[in-house]
Image 1 (cartoon, helix red, strand yellow):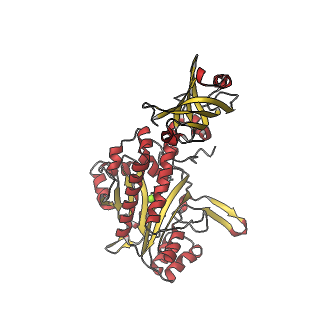
Image 2 (cartoon, rainbow, N blue to C red):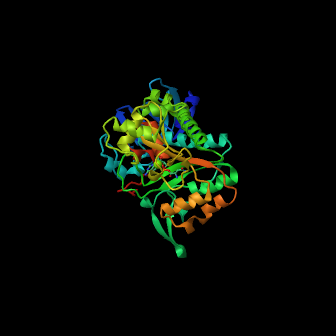
Image 3 (cartoon, rainbow, N blue to C red):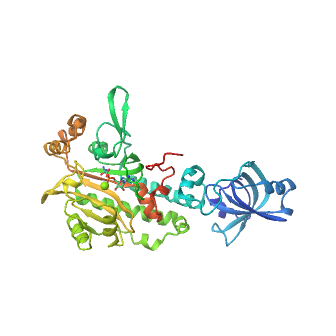
Length: 431
Ligand code: 4AD
Ligand code: MG
């Protein structure tokens, strides 16, 4: 019976079939040790000369790194293996034996060398653990919303209206229509959907032509956004801390073995429970000024500022009430001080920066028109968006969570590029 490595522990003493790949073979006369993987885990297969037919034993001598192979054998308990078992082979059948040496064969390949071979690099142990965590993060996000009665709304990638800022758009020609943009955000469409279905979310790729080459920036990244009708700023903040705590708890529950394999300190993640600390933008500026940062009220924070603010706390921290001039056109002004808006950024601990951008949205028609003009945005392109303020407008709020930044933080990665299977960065679209 074909069994996956992940399930072998339930088949101790049984004859099984494994289908997978050889990571390495060590041989010593009468015995071969195959370091085997099948996409669900890694295991040692022991091939003893007097336990297999002659052809199988001879086949093992031909096996090279990343040969594909089918193995029949018996599952044995093995306390030293991370999976608790190893397999004693009875038959070894190669599927394909490479003609050339596998290019990823040293522990110290440089990052560019590995990125150029990302399609192969994904097979490595570390990348396996990261992708398994990513998979759980994506499951956690969807489950969080579905458990709470949210409706998934898939927002478009081609958009006619600018969602965030004009500065980092990918433009392309769309038949006779003219210029359209790749989505920076699905927010405007989620706003429409929340007035139709109440509580909605999306999960999909977004695009920013950002010339920033930092460890936090991708050109194509995945975002999870949520939008809720009748939610105000406070409701929005609570939803975000629940979501982030849920994701972390889920990953600790379902994938802590992967986190441990990545060397992650689980104690730091175990602290991530609501409520999260909060400071206002104005307090954050004072904190920064008192610690030698050259910043004045009205400036946006850069990576260093975010890292410093976050380092003051053990949990993610909300920075709220930014100056309206530093933020996007759609944010609702604070009734107590119209120079700031009802918004928050959630900063992850340990230097991972902003993982969420959020706000209450302007629901008043006239005020929204005023803001569109102030930001020099073409009113015609936003006519449908203004319709949402013409019919049945209500206060509503939402946010966007950067999926890869969240994964990078949870896994403790140095750079965001490892958090996505095929990263698109400033200098890389291959493979
Ligand atoms: O803060 P941002 O720009 O917010 C929006 O796009 C809102 N329209 C979301 C909403 O309210 N529905 O982006 C949201 C998050 C950021 O906090 C960050 O985590 C991530 O997306 N992000 C990036 N991640 C990787 N690479 C980039 N270039 C990113 N830009 C933003
Ligand atoms: Mg932001």
